[in-house]
Image (cartoon, rainbow, N blue to C red; front, top):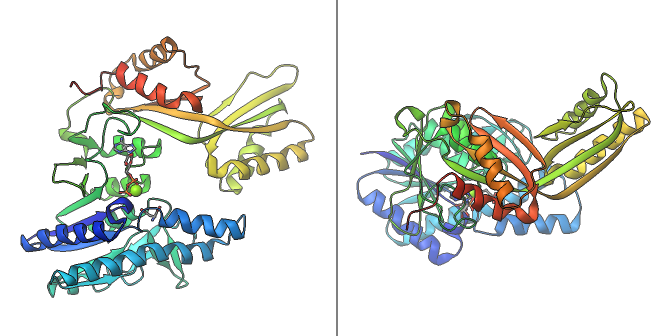
Length: 405
Ligand code: ADP
Ligand code: ASP
Ligand code: MG
C-alpha cells in the first residue's frame, strides 16, 4: 500500500461534472489499495472573480481581508469533493489549510510555509478515509488565514507530500504534462517525459504557468519527486526530479512571460550611490526587480532600465518617483507592452552558441531584442508584447523542439 498525494487544479474541478470525474479517479486510486490525500484548488475562475469583486470595491484591498476572501474558493471545492466521494460510497473528510496544520509566516497573500504538522491526516488515512485538503491556504501564528500566492495549491500539494512522506505526488491539470513550451502558444510543442528541478524552476519562474515556481523550489529542496499529468485522460505525464538520470539536451524548453513591465529611469545623475538608492527604494516597496540595464553615463547623466511583473509596476513607479524627487533630477516611465522570452536547459552549462542561435532566429524573423539577461541554464530576452507568441514559436523551432508529426 502506497500513500499517494494528488492535486487537482481549477479546470479539473471547474463544475460538478468535473468534480464527479475527479471523485471517480480518486476512488479508482483508493480501490487499487492506496491511501489517498487530495489537494484541490478553487473552481476555475473563482479566485479571479473574487479578486475582481474586491478590486471593484477598493483599488488596493486590505491583504488580510483578501486572504479570508480568496480562501473561500478552495473551501467550496474540498467540501464538494468530499460529498462527491461519499456519494460513491467512499469514506472522505475535508480539511482546511489550518486543520491540515499548514503553518505560514505573517505575510498575507504571499505567505511562506514554515511548518506542516498534518493535523490528523495520518489518523484519518489510517482509518481508511480519503482526506481532501484545501490548497493555497494556511494559517499564521496569529491564527489568521493566509494564502500562498497565485497557483499556490501546487505548493500545498508538494509540501504535504513531503511532510507526509508520500510515496507518489501527482499534479493533475488540464494538459498532459510539461511541454517544451506552452502548448496553447506553440501547438507543435512536445511533452517531456522528464524534466530536472532546476529546469522546471526556471521555466516556472520565467512564465510557464503549469507549476507555481515556489512549489518547484520546495520540491527541489526536499527532494519531492512529482508527476504533472492530465485529469482528463490516463496518459503518462512528466516526471520532475533531480537531474542525474536525465538525457543531456542543450535546450529543454521555451518560456514566455507576457506580464512584464519595462521601467525606464532617465537622466539620473551619474554619480556613486544613485542606483543604490533606486533599488533600495524598490526593495523597501517589496518590488521584485528582474533584468537591469544601465547605460554608460554621458554629460553627467545616465539611464537605468529594469523590468518588473505587471503587478509591481505602479509600486515601482511610485518608489522610483520618490527617489527622483529627493535627488532633484530624472524621470520615470513604465511600459507594459513588453514580454520576456526565455530558453532553458541544464545542457547550457557545457554548450556554447545558444545565445547566438536564439538571437539569429529572432533577427531573421524581424523581432527586435530590447534587453538580454543570462544565467547558467537560461537566456532571456525582452521583446514587444505583440511579437511574444511569434518569437516563442520561432525560438522553439530554432532549437529543434517542434514535434515531428
Ligand atoms: P491548474 O489549474 O491545473 O493549476 P494552470 O492553468 O495553473 O492549471 O496550468 C496549466 C496551464 O499551464 C496549461 O493549460 C498551459 O496552457 C500552461 N502552460 C504554460 N507553459 C506550459 C508548459 N511548458 N507545459 C505545459 N503547460 C504549460
Ligand atoms: N485558486 C488559487 C489561484 O487561482 C490557487 C491555485 O489554483 O493553485 O491562484
Ligand atoms: Mg496552477
